[in-house]
Length: 401
Image 1: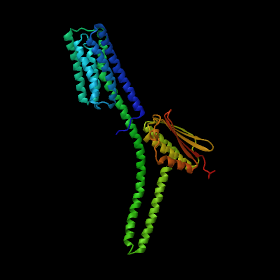
Image 2: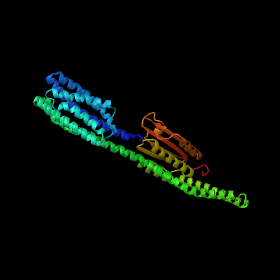
Image 3: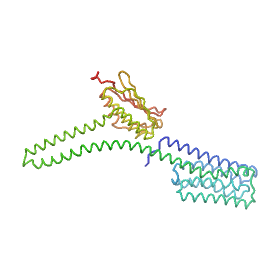
Image 4: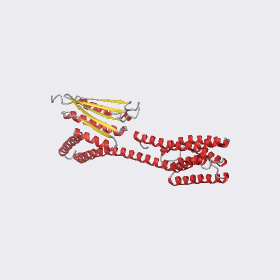
């Protein structure tokens, strides 16, 4: 199942939907006013029925616009919706043949309905449906002229060019709007993928280093242990030496692993900030840094760096943030790190949607900060749509003081 689009993508869809609804609504308004004028001039039940059906067709068209979020070739909704869309429009098409003066106007509801169905079909069927719709529209005009001798209402004469122009623009507008929205969705998916790849790449680097260290030592330990097992009865002294070597190799492997982890965690605070900005920018979020001086205590600086790393990972995984601000405020006694993101979509979002994951991450950060005399707090501002992480640490350790 693809990830849910970010808020910016949903906002783009709403803008696209409003544009399509407005365009079709304005077109239906022109057609409806033309039919209304025809009814006021003729006062016949036939034209009144066409006018009422046109209003129903307009409502069906505006509701059907919501299904366009499936995109071009996304498939039709439930057949009942398509039937509701096409039936009143087809009845207007038929009634227009029986009433004089509606040669072009009464053909438009069916054409508009078909231009809404066409984008949801695969490309070959889409072109075929539009060609059939254009043929039905032209046939309606020709048959109506043949039946009624080209009689037209004054409104249809004056609005004919406008109706024709909008009729040509309907499929163009619908297809280009959906194409633009699909581009935005694709860019959003690429943005998410870039952020995930940045995190995965760092994990793979660490895993590769760990494998290089542990693989060699474990292989040597395995061989020496097997040899010691074979010599245990024949040459106990040699077996004892091999067991001693195994213990030393295991101790060396443990020290190198600790050194690797320490080196991984000892990335400087400045490097952590730059990494965070690079990863967040690649993910499509604007990252702003406002930094004071870091704490002089290396342990406190490493703890704050861990907060930056963990918060960045959580923002990428669990929020839809488009703007992140990282501030470091330092006075004579403490340094306070504040990381704010706008990933809270609405009031009542859970922790993951707010930009932080439930689990051991926060507890581990609190313990690490507590070990150097610091603290960690979080806050959600639903009204502003922001999530805040505040970490503080002493400028100098008690030992250094």
